[in-house]
Image 1 (cartoon, rainbow, N blue to C red):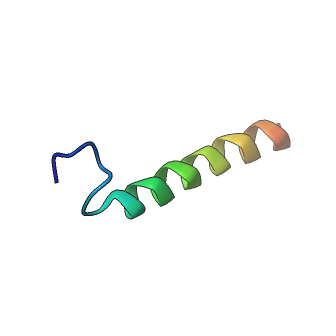
Image 2 (cartoon, one colour):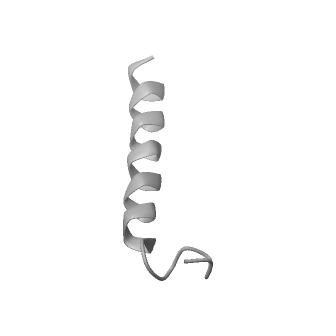
Length: 31
């Protein structure tokens, strides 16, 4: 924790970011 997000929990943070990007791209594609 506190190391830029690449230590404990870094993998989960990466998944969340990718999921958000997927939602944004999907919404942009549908509209």
